[in-house]
Amino acid sequence: MIKYIAVTLSLSFSIYALAQDQNNLVPNSSFESIEGKFKKLKQISAAKEWSSPTALNADLFSKKKEGPIGAPVNMYGKEHPKDGDNYAGIVVYSYNNKTPRTYIQVPLMSALTGGLDYCVKFHISLSDLSKYAVNNIGAHLGVDPLTLDSKGDIIFNNRKEFSNVVKDASNKIYNARYNWETVCGNFRANGKEKFITIGNFYNNKDTKYQKLKKLANFQGTQRPEAYYYVDNVEVFMIENPSDCDCMVGAKKQRESIVYHRDFADNGEEISVEEQMKRLTVYFDVESSKIDDMFRKSLDKLAMLLTENPELNLQLNGHTDKKEEEAIKNDPENELLVNLGIYRAKSIKDYIIKKGISSERLITIDAGPDQPAAPGLSMLSLAKNRRVEFIITK
Figure 1 (cartoon, helix red, strand yellow):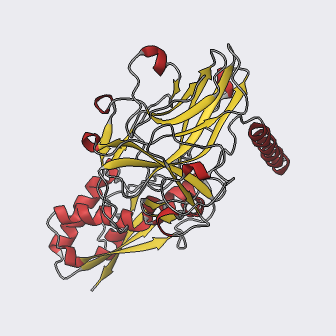
Figure 2 (cartoon, rainbow, N blue to C red; figure 1 turned 30 degrees about the horizontal axis):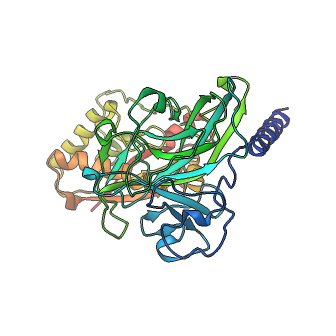
C-alpha cells in the first residue's frame, strides 16, 4: 500500500509539472533555442525571442561552449544549468554604480487578461566571483517593452511602476553561490501585459546588500558587483493565488533530532579512551554548528588533553546516509560536500580556543560509511551525525 501511494504521488507531480510547462507563457523559457552565431559575451539576443532593454546587452552561457561563455565554468564562476544546456547572466548591482546593470526581456506568447491571477517564477544563482549579494531581484510585467537607449540602470520611482514588479515575498538577499534559488510571486493582471523583464529596478540605496569573501577554491578576481545567472522563467495563469506554490523546488530541511546521551557518574574509574568515546558530539541535519548542550563536554575534553599532554587526538567527522543523498542531488554545494570535515574543524576550533595546540589535533572526513547505528530511522540518523575522538600517540 505504501509503494502504491508513493507511485501515485510521483505520477501526480509529473502530470502537474507537464501541464504547468505547457501553460507557460514565456517562450524559450530556458534559453535553449539559439539563433545565429553565439561566440562571445553580451549575446543574450542569440537566445530566440530574448533581448536586453538597454544599450548594454546581458550574457548567455552554454554547456556547448567553452571559455568566457561556457557552462558550468565561465568568466563569472561555475554553475550547471537549472534546465537544459543554457542560462542567462545579468548584473543587478555594483558598488557605487560603477558597472551598469543589465536586464533580460522577452514578449509573452499572449497578453495577460485583466483581473486574472498569474504565477511568476524564475531561478537565479549568484556567480562565484561576485563580491556582493543583494535583494530586490524581480520581474516586471508591462504592456510595452522597457527601453533605455543608453547603458544604464532602469530605476522606477513611483508606486504604480513598482506594482508591476513581482518579487519573492521574502525579498531576501540571494547569496547562494552553489545552487539555484527560486524567485516566485503572484501577479494580478491589469490587462494586456505582454512583456516580462528581469532585473533590479530599485536604487542602490533601497537595495540591501551583503559583502562576501572570495571562495577559497575558485580562481579569479572578485568583481565589485552582484552578478546572477538566470534560468527557467515561467508565467502561467492560476485560479487562486494559493495555486502559485512558491515552495515547489525549494529546499526543505527534513525533520531531525540532535542526539545526546548523559552518563551517570557512579564513581568508577574510566580510562581516558573510554572518556573520549563518551564525549562524542552530535549534530543537526546538514549542520556543522555545535549545539550548546555539548559545550560542557568539549570543555571536559580540553581539560583531559591539558592533563595528558602526551596525547594527540584524531577528530573523525561523520555524516548520515540522507546527507550523502543530498550531496548527490546538489554536488556543487561546498557546505554539503565538506560537511564531515567542517564538523571536525568546528570541534577543533573550539578546543584550540581552550588552549590546546593545533598540532595535537587532526581532522578527518569519515563520511557516511561508518554508521554508529543501522537503519534510516530518525534516531539512527541522529546517532550517525557525529564527531568521534580517537587517541593517537
